[in-house]
Length: 303
Image (cartoon, rainbow, N blue to C red; front, side, top):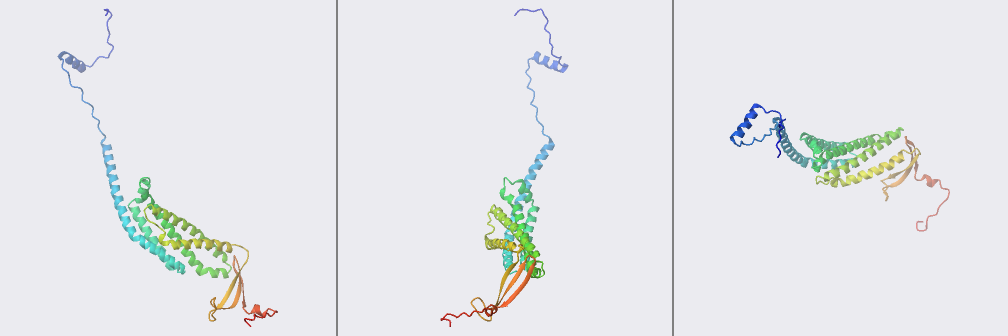
């Protein structure tokens, strides 16, 4: 390499005195110093405590949830048979127009459902159902079951009240030209029947996720509700029509036995409008026969 007389300049910044002494000592003695230690990462104590608290919280929530589900299951095993029996009792009472007995049974069922819902809320199962809806679909159905069951019982209680109101006041409404009140009450029953049908269908779907077949034990009641809904739809169309209607009335005497139940001694015509009864006419069964001017000879077999 060609020798150059030009000075070589070091443009690096000068080292500190301690650093110069370190490098000079290392170069003069030839001692290889150990490498500098690796820097340790220190975690924030607050983050450690937060993570620990979160883990403890998750464990506690899991324990409380498990205890809550077990307790709710035990309570449900006692309450569900009572609720079923209350529905069947109320169904039979309504069939006999025993509205007070039916209302008492429905209110008892509602009280049991509300008690179960309160217990579920106390354990936080409703909140957990919203959080773990994707991982635990069965848990998600719990609040929906309570909602549908309460809607069902509340609707049945309303229908019971309407039936009682009609049984006590229908005749008075019709005779005092307040027939529109009867139509309003029947329309209210029809609307509630629709909500009951929806709640019952939803309850059947939601309980299926828990492996319980709702509706089998009250199948006859469901069929009768369907028939009642169809009947109300027909009779409401009849009551809301402005055109007068005529109803034939047959009066039988059970003391004179006949295949139809008794001797038909009289008959009548009841004229009805949307406001109520407008006229009632009654005739003796022999009146039409007495008005005939032609004599009909009976058959030889009856002569």
